[in-house]
Length: 610
Image (cartoon, rainbow, N blue to C red; front, side, top):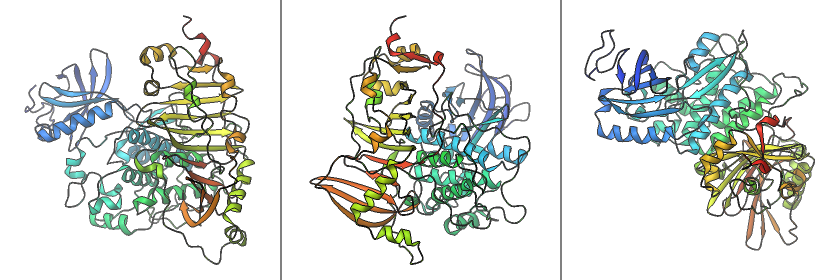
């Protein structure tokens, strides 16, 4: 069928109809149509695989500039591997049609799910948005800015009452979709979910995506966008000037959620989360908090703060009867403000991290360097300038503050660091995330560590692959990605990963080398600095909390510590030289770090024996 034909079933001119073939794809049925083109269910006949086949509108397909951008962005998205991003299988031009073939998700989008099933309970809403944040973090790490995060671009798959969320439509051609532009310009996005600075002409960025994700969180919580109006002008004005909506209620989970809303939807870009990784971590931490206003015993099996991977943390099931968490009646887009939220679980100790030198990695032997790079440190990968954190503007204190806080602020800077160290040394668990240089590369870590020496999390070279890291019951193992192995100098990565077949690789021959990996006491121990000079640099906002900023200098070495003013006086962040930084959170949160089944583990001594 020619691209300018009209479908006999009434479909728009220029598009195929069921039964037509586009290269190796056979059209089965039309799923939807928008300003960019038409989406079909199709079969990739050489593989017998069903796909979602998007045929681009001829108006765009004939534009040379669009075609070049389409190809570039489609290649970028096709290279993205994420458990929570719709996979792109192929793209190109066949029989006069410009197309993109992707993973078929048939249960609809998040907006439709909320319209049909109602607003989910708080924990279920947080779980879905945590999955979206995970997909967005992977996209940002690959350098992709989404530009149009909204309920219709989050697809869901429901199996056995369990919801899996997938981020879709990464702005390919969306910058030219008139239905999704800012008033009077060609800025990408939907006004209802666009960051305030985009309406003033700023370019889309990672932090504008963060703002949109905050808006999406509110939709999942309340069933309506955070700001509404009779016209786009009213909506834009509300985004620029309106108060950030907050949940009512005093439960720890609700208060933590309100803090996430404030940090993701801040009017100023610099006051927002600077990475999707940071927002995801706070969502995970909030999910571990009690949903009841009264303290409840932690579950016997907690949730480890790591990115949901293939066999990792499962999404929460959706109950048969979904109970709205927002108050009935009234303007659900602007519920009454909640009382000041309690801080999310804070972070760990002031100690310059001592890196343990890595060993040479050899395919077929122990992958020692995976754990040796960075030793017992752990932190979350941050894309762009997110690694610098959000120091924010100076914060002023009020004379009505608690006496204990006033006393703490009156301490000498050395005593402030000492007080923080004391709090950190009695921790049982902590999440550590950050990054540090390793030769010419930059390594990011995101790990939950326990005082028993257990840990689980991820380690990755920024802009490349990563590895899951696990230590428990005295056993140490990793599950690497191809890019991670490649950065470590392995040439036959595909052969090695095929051999590994998704299993964990356990280190047995080099166990002594890792005796202190994930040792919380070892990690918190500070090097002696008898000649160091500490300086109190005043109050700042760090991770949404009021913190004292302390510089510690010894000769040419300079480190900066951010200590929480409120009790307990946890260390929130350390900035070191050479672009190294570490953030701490989820203090003493319950975690469940368990050993995989033996069938899922390959010992390094067994490599090459087949």
